[in-house]
Image (cartoon, rainbow, N blue to C red):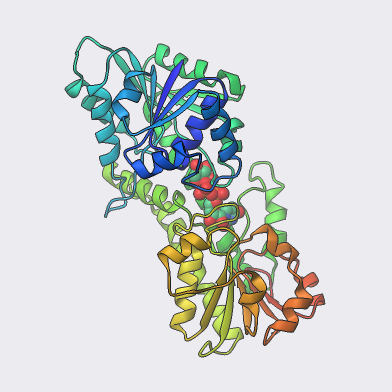
Amino acid sequence: MNLCVIGTGYVGLVTGAVFSDLGYTVYCADTDGSKIDMLNCGKMPIYEPGLEEVVERNTQDGRLFFSTDIGDCISRSEIVFIAVGTPPGADGYADLGAVKAVAKTVAQNLNSYKVVVNKSTVPVGTADIVREIIIENRVDPQVDFDVVSNPEFLREGNAITDTLKPDRIVIGASCQSAAMKLVELYAPLERPMVVTDVRSAEVIKYASNSFLATKISFINAIANICELAGADVHKVAKGIGLDARIGTAFLNAGLGWGGSCFGKDTACFIATAEKLGYDFALLKSVVDINSQQPAFFVKKINSVLRGLEGKKIAVLGLAFKPNTDDLRDGKSIEIMAQLSALGAEIRAYDPIAMDNARKAYPDVDYCVDPYQAAANADAIVIVTEWNEFKFLDFDRLKKTMRAPVIFDGRNMFDPDRIRSKGFEYHCVGRAAKDRE
Ligand code: UDX
C-alpha cells in the first residue's frame, strides 16, 4: 500500500517514517523546500529521539521518499494523510488555511479512489469542509474518495514510541470501507482501536488534550493551596493518583504546561464551544490557572531574595519540557522576562534547545553548562526538568555560586536531599522549611 503524508513537521514526519518502518511505501511531501532538502540529505528538521535512525533506514531501503511535488505524491498513493499545521487564529479557533489548500491539491490529483485522512488537529466539522472542497475541485467527478479523522496523540520527545505503541488509535469514518482501510493500515501495530463517526473522532482529540491540561492545572491549583496550608502537593498527588479513577500521570505540579499543543488546543476547543453556543467556563479556568503559575513562581523568587535588582540568576532549562528542542509556549521565556523586568541579570543553559533559543531570544547570556550559568549566581531557577540536572555536582555548584539557593520550578528534587547538601531549596506546593 502506498501512502502520502503532507506536512513534514513533528506529526507528519514521524507518522510517515514509522509507516515506512512497518513496510509501507511512504511519500512525504512539504511545500518547504529547505525541510525536504534537509531530509534528502539525511538531516532532521526537528529533534526527536530515534527519528534519524528510522528515516535513514527506510530511505536507504527505498520505502520513504521526500518531495515538494505534493501532487505527484498524492497521485501515487491510496491513502493521503493531511498533517499540516493548524495554528490558532486571533480568536483561538484553528486556522484551517493550510488544510484547505491541501484538500484542494488532493482534489486536483484525485486520479483514483483515495482515503483522505485528517491527521492534523482540526476542530469538529473540518472533515466536512475537506469533503466539500474535494467535491468542488476534483478533476473527475466520477473518482470517489472518503475523508477520515485519525487524530494523533504524540508527545514531543516520545513521538516515535507514541506512534509505535499508542494507547489507542482513533479512526473516525462515515463509511465502513474507509474505516477498514485505516484498521488494515494500523493492524501491524496491534494496538487498541476506537472506530467511530468522524465528528466524535474530531472531538476526542480536543477532549483528550483538554483533559490532560485540566489535570495539570488542577494539581497546580492544589499546589497553590498546599503552599498556603503547609501541605506537600507531591504527597497529595500520590495520595489521589493511586485511585485508579484518577491515575498518577499528569499530576506533576510545577510551572504549568507549555508546548505547541495544549495552549493551541484548549484555545481552539473554547472557541469551538463558543461557536456551537456553549460557554466552556471549566476550560477557561484551566487556561487561567496555567497562565498564572510563572508569575506565582517569580513572586516567590523575588520575595525570598528580597528583591531582584542586580541579582544574578542562573536559569536551567529552556525547552517547554525535557527531550525536545522546542521552546514554543515554554515557561522559560516568560520567567526570564519577568525576572529581568525586576532587575535580575539572567544567564541560561539548556542541553538541547539553546540553538533555537539563541535564534528567538538573542539577548540572553547562554552558557555552555549549568556550572558556567551558576557561577557567582544568587540563585538557580530550574524551569525544565532535564535528566542531566538530576546529576548536578551540588558541591561544585555551592563553591561557584554567590549563595546556595535553588528554586525548582518542576519539583524535580527531593527537598531533604538538596537541603542536606547545604542549599536553600524552594519549589512548588511543598512548604519551604528554610525560611518561615
Ligand atoms: C501533548 C499530549 O500529551 C499529546 O498527547 C498531544 O498529541 C500533544 O500534546 P506534548 O505537548 O508534546 O504532548 O507534551 P506533554 O508531555 O503532554 O507535556 C505538555 C506540557 O505539560 C509540558 O509543558 C509539560 O512540562 C507539562 N506537564 C506535563 C506538567 O506540567 N505536569 C505534568 O504532570 C505533565
